[in-house]
Length: 146
Image (cartoon, rainbow, N blue to C red; front, side, top):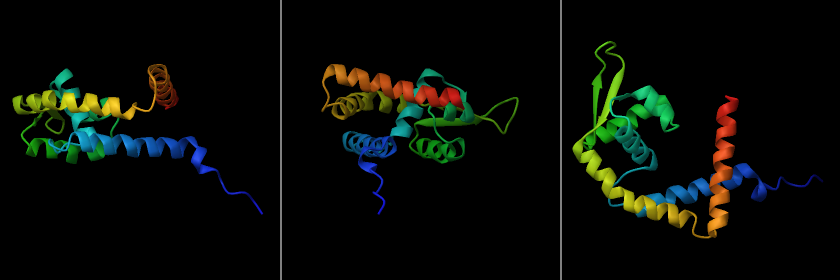
């Protein structure tokens, strides 16, 4: 009889579990804001690059461009993001963080820092640095292969 697959030690399974933990901790720490990790990433990306188009923004935060429209609509409904058609191509949507959105993102940063601390809480400083470096290498290696 064939032995079952050892999913408990499979990288894909462990990454999925780590993602579940990270999102769960994020949602706990930011519950007062009613924001998702992707919404927070979008706000911060737009603070750094105001007037970015929706497709480029999606690539910046590594999120599906087709789904980003609904995420951006929710940020718009909160009054945190403003969307306007580009003058040269009205189909292209340009985005800006509103002042309310900027203030919300600033208020969230303390909670998000706590999220990062909690995620890495079971590791010592060296292990935390190694994990971040290895995850960065893993992601970059696969992005380079695309």
